[in-house]
Image (cartoon, rainbow, N blue to C red; front, side, top):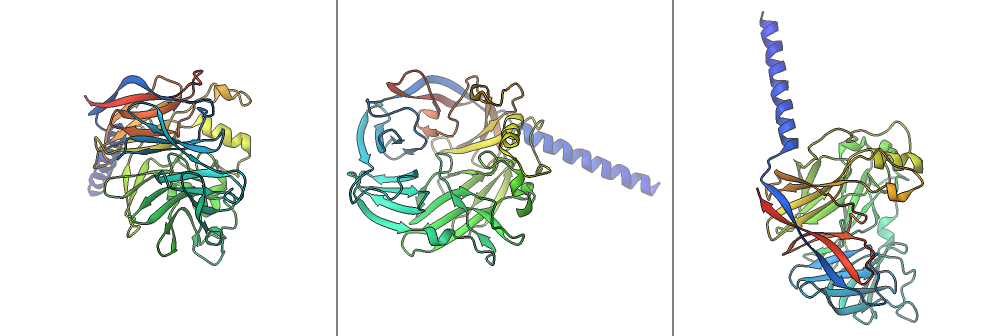
Length: 385
C-alpha cells in the first residue's frame, strides 16, 4: 500500500509539473499588437531596399542603414523618413578597405563609425568621408587552439546579432564553423573586445539542447547555429539560440547567465535534439523549413517588453523554388521579468525577418516591396489586452 501511495504521489507531481510547463508555454494573454500604417523611408537613386544591416539610434530617433549598392551608410530621420546624412565607405585609394566584406557596423556619430570586415577580421574606425582613423587587426584572437578550452566564435554580425559598445566593450556576435573543436572545448558564440585595453573575452557557448561539441555539425549553419541577442536598459545581454525554447540573460561584467522560458505556444514540430548525422545542404534546408525555430529577439525600451520571433514549420514547399521558402511568423512577447505575456501571429509574409527594430511608434519589420522609392517597414504597436 505504501508503494502504491508513493507511486501515485510521483504521478501527481509529474502531472503538476507537466501542466506547469504547458502553462509556461502558453503564457498569459496580456499583450498583443495593433497593426498601424507602414513606416516609409525615402530612397534616392543610389540606395536600394535590400540592405542587410541596420541600427536604430533611440537617442536621436534615427535609422542607420548599410546600403550595399554603392557601399555607404545612410542616416534617416525617423520622423520625416528623409536622408539626413551619409557615411562613405571608400573603395579605392589609401582609405579603401582591404577586402571590403563589411558584415556589420556600429555608428557612434557622423565622424565615428566602426566597421567589421569579416574576411580579414579587422575592426575599422572611419569618419564621415570614409577616411580610416584606426585599424585593429583581430585575426590573432580567432585562431582556433585545440589546447584552449574557450574556443573562439566565427564573427558574423546581423541586425538581430549586432555590433554594440557598452562601457568601452565592443560586442561581436557570431557562430561556430564546427571545425578544429575538441570535446573538452566550449564552442563560444560571443566575443567581447575591450577598446581601451585590447583584451578579448569569449563567452556564451551553445546550450545543452545542441548535444555538445560532437553534435554541432548536425545542426544547420545558417539556421540553427546563429544566435541573436538584444541589450536592455541595464546593459544586460539577452541571448536567444534558434533551437532553444529558453533565453539567457547575461551579465556583461561577470558573464554569469540566467535562463528563462520564452518559447512558442505549440511545441509540435519544434526540433529538440540533434539529427542522426551531419547535414548536407538539402537536409539543412529541409530541417529549417519543416521545423519551428526561433529568430531575432528585440528589446522595446519604451514599453519594457521583449519581442522574439518564431518561424513556424512549413510543409508545402519546393526545394528549388525560393518563393515557397517563406515561413509564417509569430511574435512572442515577454515582459521585463521575462514572463511570456502574449503571442501574435503575423498575417504578412516576411522576406527579411532579421531586419527589425523598435521605435517610439512600435515594432518594425522590414518588407521588400515593388516600391523601389521607399524602404518599407511593417509597424506594430504593442497594446494591452
